[in-house]
Structures are given as structure tokens and as C-alpha cells.
Image 1 (cartoon, rainbow, N blue to C red):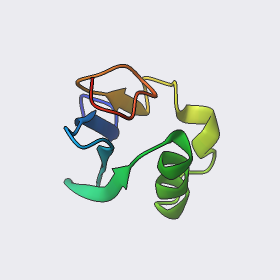
Image 2 (cartoon, rainbow, N blue to C red; image 1 turned 135 degrees about the vertical axis):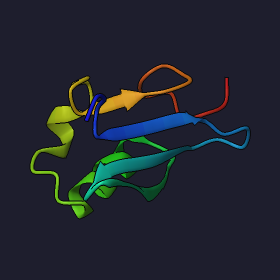
Image 3 (cartoon, one colour; image 1 turned 120 degrees about the vertical axis):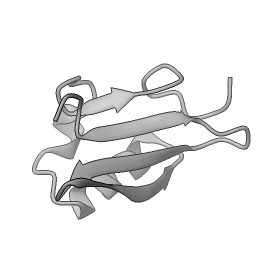
Length: 74
């Protein structure tokens, strides 16, 4: 694997960001997050041990198309 296993995609025009995780050789969409809390809930449900602790860790999460922690469209 060459990138972070979790991707927070660009903000949608209506707000929120799709979250996906790469595991078992494929990408799986976890849902659309509208806040850091939503993201932490998705990651915990996916089995991430310390979801709060990895939000700013580029080895685990790649924030695409916008700043980290930005949930509304620019």
C-alpha cells in the first residue's frame, strides 16, 4: 500500500465528506462525516484502536481536497 489507509475525501457542495478505508485489498466507504465526531465514530466502528489519536497522523489519514477538519464546502 502506498498511501494512508483512511481517506477523508473533498467536501461535497452540500457539506460533509465521504470517508473510506482501504482494507482486505479494497476500498470500503464508511459513510459521510459532517464533523470530527462523526469521523471518530466511523473509525471506531471500523475497528481503529485510538480514532481520536490518529486524526492528524498522515500515516493513517489522508485529507483530500480541503483542509483537515473542514467539513463544509469552501
